[in-house]
Image (cartoon, rainbow, N blue to C red; front, side):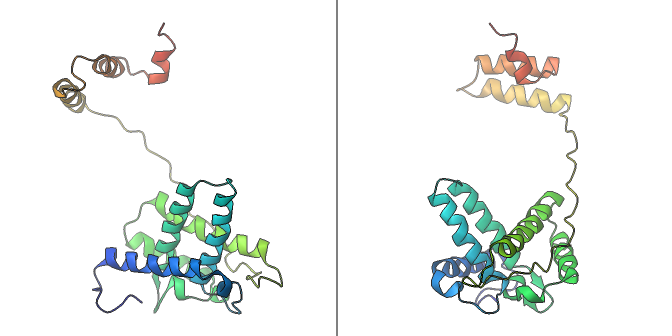
Length: 206
């Protein structure tokens, strides 16, 4: 629950506040690994510690870690019933919660691709915990959403520009002082007139 000074409709401020909470959990590694009953937020923080180790070892890019952190923050900030997802206990999750999560994200207007990204990352965290669980680290060894089905991968629809859009784009290029009269303008005209891909054109250059 965000502080009362953050209004109920100020989602940007609430998201930023929730991200600081996640950062604090990651910094508190010694306590995280001693949890007896894990919340989603605490498990996410421990997962991020493991991902940071991969970055330090050169096996993952820092940008990838930043992206994962943002996705996990969004998951944790989703309200399911009377609790934020981050406050839910991992061992209490079930398929009804899964369906409620997907419904909440659709209600927010998230794209099908983003919803699959969010749900896929949640399943990845739970699966990682089940694989990595030992008596020493105390991670949850049971994946409560193992049988939950990811939403289908959205099929990208082909996109085309109209004649007017193509003409407007070429006019803008001709007016741009850094591009006017350059080969870039000629290249775009050729691409538009022929419908070729840039890679197809380069095969015939030289």
